[in-house]
Image (tube, rainbow, N blue to C red; front, side, top):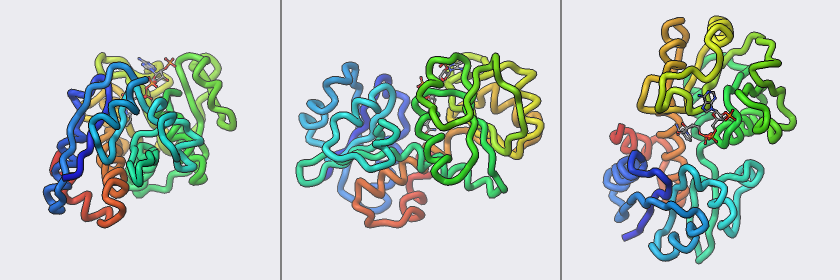
Length: 260
Ligand code: NDP
């Protein structure tokens, strides 16, 4: 019986155990995926080894610690400095970032001609998705409430609300947690309406809740989605790594989807 878990704080809300266990069952793999509340991130490696797991996902706020404890990190996750998937092989820990590749797949499903993207927010998620989008040739602009986090976005056009001069963007991304536990929009309403009106689509990384950002996008009749596809796809890509690429993306997705 192989063992997997997700480490986070909080972790009670995580859908990952349901998603992965559903795929393990459907694909007849003897494995179990649990959730592990980890308050002290510095204990991540110790806990990973103590539980004897074969792999894990890592969620807030431990993705940077996960990056530090791996013996080998793939080149994309190294550039981002954050790992959300660890696989143990031959007693070594291998780290990956599947949030970014999951997000990329989610926006491609819009099937629209998207070239320019505005990302609202400059946190960990923004760092990962902006990097993969730039690698894939999209023209990415970052907009954040405050200036300090923008410093790590060298090579991007970047603004705070004060110096932002809105242009036309094909896709608007809310990568902030605004609206997750309150009713706030991620940026001033008038400015947001003007950019959404000129956009082809919008996406929120928050899932399982219709945020004010998503509500506003829908009211303007542009194709919009929450973070569920991103969540599903990052999970499928992590599962591919947990099972050493024995199954196709579609085979895994078919069972993992049942958790939603
Ligand atoms: P961080 O804490 O690293 O960053 C938060 C960002 O949001 C900052 O830029 C912050 O701005 C901004 N922000 C927070 N509240 C507001 C607000 N009320 N108005 C404007 N800006 C605000 O968070 P993460 O990047 O790690 O996570 C962001 C979200 O992504 C979370 O909700 C998480 O659940 C979700 N997520 C979803 C995934 C999925 O699979 N769908 C995967 C990973 C994450 P400032 O710098 O000014 O503080």
